[in-house]
Structure formats: C-alpha cells, structure tokens
Length: 380
Image (cartoon, rainbow, N blue to C red; front, side, top):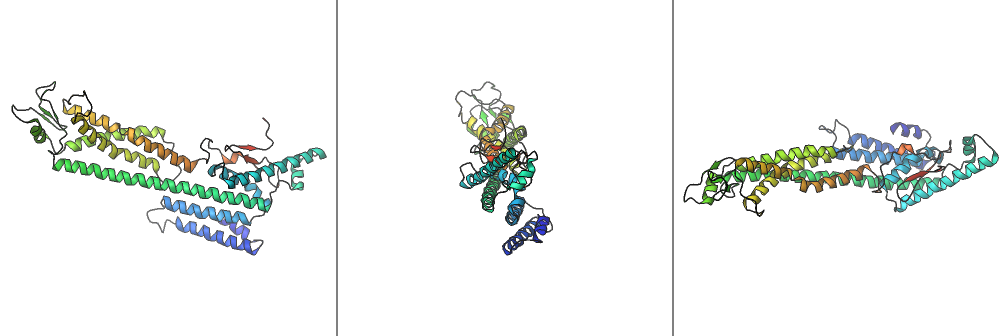
C-alpha cells in the first residue's frame, strides 16, 4: 500500500488528490504504529489487528479515489466481491452498485455487437477503441461508497465477534470462580448440604450412608440426617467437580470435530471450549443434589461411591445440553465475520470472477438479488 501511494504521489493530478494521498499515507503510518511489536511488548491483540485493518482499508479507499476510471477498472472484481459479501441484497448502496455493473454489462454487449457488425476478429482492440468498458467517474464513486459501507458492515461483525468472545471469557471466569467457591464452602460446611445418600431401605443393608469419598454403616437408632452430615468429607464436592470437569473436557475434545478453524484473532472456539469445563463441574454438583432430593421419581438412592462418581461423570458430560446453544451462536458469529451477507448464499471465491476493463472485454460480475453473481456473456 505504501509503495502504491508513493507511485501515485509522483503525479497526483490535482490538489484534491494530493490531499487524499497525504491522508492515505497517514492512515498507513497509523496502521504500522498500531501493530508495532516494540510498542506492544506482549504482542498485538485482536483489537490492535482490527484497528490496523481499519486504517489500511481507509488508506486503500482514499487511494482508489485518486485513480482515474480506466486505472480503477481492474479492481472492480475485488470491489464487487466485497460489496456482495458484506451488504444484504436489499441495501440501497448494493443495489446502486449492481446498477453500475449492469450498465457496464450492457455497454460490453453493445461493444461486442459493434465488433461483430464490423467483422473484427480481435475483440480486445475494439473494446479499447470504443471505451464502453470503462465506467464513468460518477459510477466509480457509487461503487466506492458501497465498498465503504460493506467494510463498515464487516467491521461491525468483527466488533460483534470481539464482544461475544469477551462475554464468553467473562462468563467462563465467573463460572470457574463459582465452582471454586462451591468446593471451598462444601469443605468448610461439609454437613450443610452433604452429597450423601442414606440406604436405610436400600438394596445393600451393609451400608447405611454412601458419600463420594466413603461409606459407613448406619448404627441402630441413629438419625440418617445426622449420619450423613458426619460421614460427609471435606473433599466430596471436589471429587464430584473433578469428575464433572473431566467429562466436560472429553466433551470439549469431541466438539473439536465441528470446529473449522478461524482466521480471526478473537479466539472464539477456544473460549467456547473453556466454557464447558466449569459448566460441567457445576452441573455435576447440581445433578447429584437433585438426585439426593429424589427429584427424579422412581430413581433409588445410589448404593456405592462409585455410582455417585459415575453419575457425576454423566452429568458433567450432559453440560452439552446447555453449552450447545452457545456453540451454535458462536458459529453464527464466526460465519458473520467470514461469510456472505446473504445467509443462504455459499461462500464464494472472489478471484474466480472478472469484470470489463479498459484493456480487455472480460465479463462483468452482476450480483443478483439472491447473492449470486452471474458474469455477462455466459451461455447456459
């Protein structure tokens, strides 16, 4: 970008263009300062990369505005691809850019018709002579305005992704803190809400009270509630949470099969994977408490410590029922950053399209209302 600006500065054409080039060089210097590793000792973060990209986009737009239409025409495929990718089909600025593309397509067809009438075989010579393939300055201003709007929409999607990742990290930290607090409080007041089951009428009469860490017989005349409080160990909550978090780790590893990877610097997949760990620990504790309170009718008390830990593993893995909604939202946010403004349109490769230029009558991509681009002169 800096080299292109220096080359254009040798012949700006007008004082207005010289000022635009000066502002573009300032934007490039601002981008370099934002991502300077010497300034940011810990390395550029996602916000630094986004800010630098904003400055580079601003410099590129200012540079485009200084180019004559014939020099700007080769950049049209990239411009139309940006517009189609980030602006919805009903956006007025995209509609105006599509009108420009259609006008260029009609001019190209007229040029081809004139060449056929004259019997010329080398069509590129006629296209250059006719000049119909080069858009007007007003048309290019319309396209550049639409590109600015598309980049603004893209930046909003990136800010949305950054806010989503920040929110997930905060919630994960709070859940980790809550899990630690539950384990500490359960160790201090182990008899308040013990994770133990009484088996006075159970299938195994040799055990009267079963806890995650140990089991004891129920003496004759002893109260089941008192024995549960005495039998409970300070490490019961820790055991259940570790079992639930281990199962959540397995669920997070299994969820990697759905991750496509991302080119963004926001780390949303990592944040979503970390969210599963404290969620699994807390869900395991709450599930054991619900089982102890006979929340599920017909489910008998757990007979052994192994059964309690096994249920903690199952409950820890079941956190997928809750975090799946967050995973789905994260995928939608990433798709918004990567992909098209039309939800049903597949992501397309921009360099596969071509447009009419001053030197060659290439087909002009005309974005349709459903987000699909159809080049001119294409026979079905």
